Amino acid sequence: MATPRRLLPSLSLLSAFEAVCRTGSTLAAARDLDLTQGAVSRLIQNLEAQIGVALFMRDGRRLVATDAALAYARDVAKALDLISRGAMRVRSNTG
Image 1 (spheres, one colour):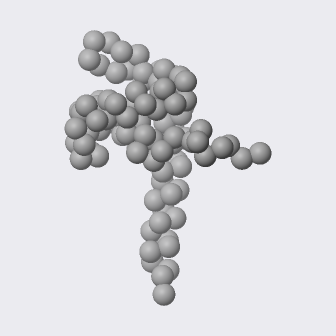
Image 2 (tube, helix red, strand yellow):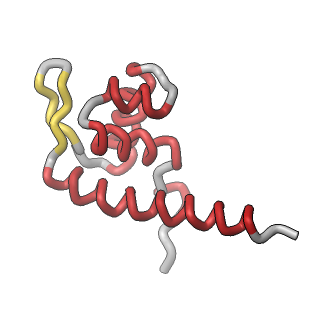
């Protein structure tokens, strides 16, 4: 049975999450995504609210990825890469 689309996080939420895990901070992720640090922080909060799991421990202004976040980040990175490669394949095969 397929997951209802309303339960699937948006690409913007997943991209922000992946970028924070990959770069290690909301500031670096914001630079990578050409967003503000506040926007990235809100995207992370929205993702956590949507899936109902705290992905990061808050240490002052610093985010520390949980073990669950690190495992999820590996899956999300693979999925985003697959989507990107698929888009590139479609673009190169138009005609």
